[in-house]
Length: 371
Image (cartoon, rainbow, N blue to C red; front, side, top):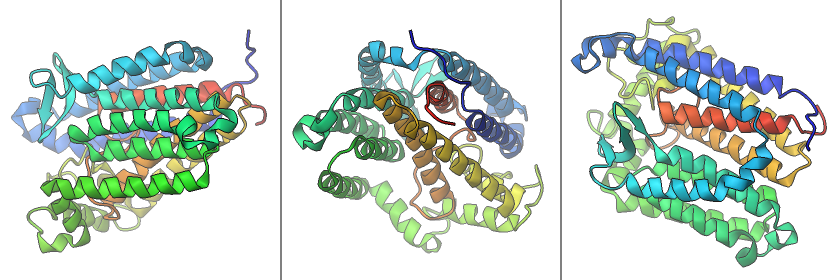
């Protein structure tokens, strides 16, 4: 029987609650007008707020449950859960089962609700890979006996996600598993080779799809096609720039609120933060994510259990990479790709599984060796 050594990490818990609170407020502020003027949402300005509060409540409940469920027991079920997650990844591609939205088929319809299997797959593969790598010992230095089996599983999952298509999620998953390989002690030469292969694969994925190439070219020069492929990023620039240092005030945004910025409550919600809360508000969000990464990695480093260490590294890295990509897209530092800002963007599946991941990290924090 394992004894509980200490309460869960309080600073990580508070950081997550702060990010979640900012998210609920900004989802309402960014979506109020669009929900009010569109008949599809029954002209209800609280349409998105009510749903985000529902998802946040479910996610927090799941987080508290997982936080008190011994993470070690995940080993018993992870292979079955990963198998089921792969089945869902295949099902989402089948017409009639998968739900198409904006040219992407990433969701499975559940009556009035939808479920995004890729979010489940990300978390499951992190735990599965941590479970496998933790028992490798010195064999992790071997490419074929160490990382190859888990690399192949990751490639299969990323390939299925890429077909949906969802390059952002596929890249996040691949990057997370790569960091876990490094943390487990893989050879630097293998890591360099994999990093090169990964960059090549991203380049091929961009070149193979005309719309991705158009987005990439728009990223290089959005003003070349301001009414087409460059529209998203230009409107995001205008929203961020109009916020100035202190912002226009909560609920007072124009570009991010009055339907100029597309997906203002999901993929581009950081532009709403920059406009209404200004440079200071944007820096606060980035600081909170940095604080989250620090506490997550500290928990990993101070865990005496290799499985727990790698799981915490993977879950922390996955959330951090998703935040980096989202903020990079909104600020024009990366090409446009559809990926949400963790804890903050509107969305049920992403929020719930992100909070479940936090619950696992908090669970692990109970068994660390130092404060």
